[in-house]
Length: 201
Image 1 (cartoon, rainbow, N blue to C red):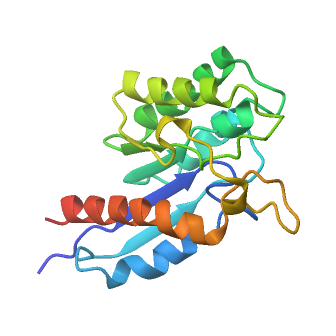
Image 2: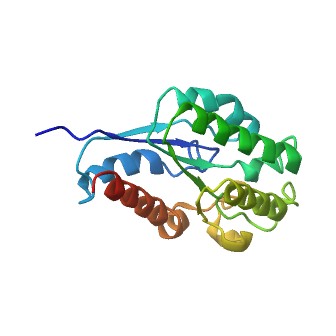
């Protein structure tokens, strides 16, 4: 009986992927996936994200991710920081998005790419006044390149401050754990299970 090839997931992005605001979903996912009925072989997970980064980081580090030869990449487009840190222009953000995708498609033959949008942000964040524009641009970039998106924030709808980490301290921007577990983690888990089912039919 031949051994099944391992499925290799790689994740990259900003605070949604790793860091103090990520709710530790990557290690939680790694622990959960082997218990799912769709899991018929070995699951390998690489977390290449870094909090508080723009797509400049994503573009620079895309070759490092290529070296890991993942079968599947779930990546955040960094829009939530591109519009605030720097800030980058929409053109720069688009160029970085395209460069990441080109790097992976060229150097990881057959790689499966999925884009995920940012977590919803609080509408009162004064540093991200063009968040809607960057969100729309990121989805358009993915669609133009034929990449499906996990859209965590349909329409870039803001969340109420009570669902953010603003009290007693925080930035009133990122969702609290319970919000993430209700609205975002289930879609990421469903995505991973579907990929395993297709990989090991």
